[in-house]
Length: 269
Image 1 (cartoon, helix red, strand yellow):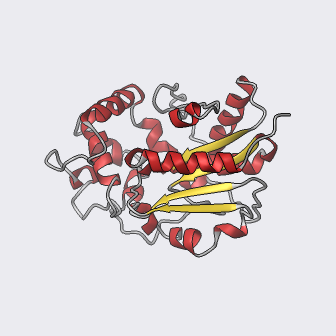
Image 2 (cartoon, rainbow, N blue to C red; image 1 turned 180 degrees about the vertical axis):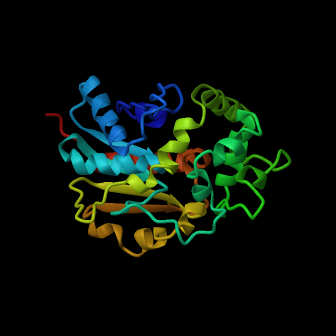
């Protein structure tokens, strides 16, 4: 967001509810995608922003897509990194039992796995695993945290100082809500089989992102499935990009983002 602000745009970068510096929802409150959509609308209203470009990464793409469908009059365009649009909740039933999404959606399983280590070690392991090109999948008798140890180096673009900063945020938030949203709420995504986006959409994908191997992702990105829902769609691929492409290659991502914004100027009302 610093690059966007430096280019003269107004940039607002909120932490999702339950993450980072944002408040935790009540423990008995069920995680809801609609809440995240409502949060975006509330932020725009609070700052008196009539319309905005939405820039989203990973699971943040889902509420960004949904916001654009529900509120096209408040949306200038959507930029998403890593997760293509799906008109229906994704099924991972064909994936191995040790697939991390299946493991983490089980009540209490990730809590027990993470609880063996301090927060910094958990965040470190997640960054190591998710920066790779292979889907994190545990074998029988393993948990996800067993797939890397302290001898596994951090990605070269992710420093110990970065790790300290993220660990501090998760020490504040904990993992309760981040496990609910998205992992235990993926099946609650709405069906949008009749979706038709009225705004431009820009998808940025690292070609070494392990998510490319998820069921349906290749068809959505390279097979033209997204075009039927998004008449004004552009997709950019970054050959060496990982799941954390925006942290790994920020200059390339910022250049693409700024180019998209410049190609879609907003006329002041």
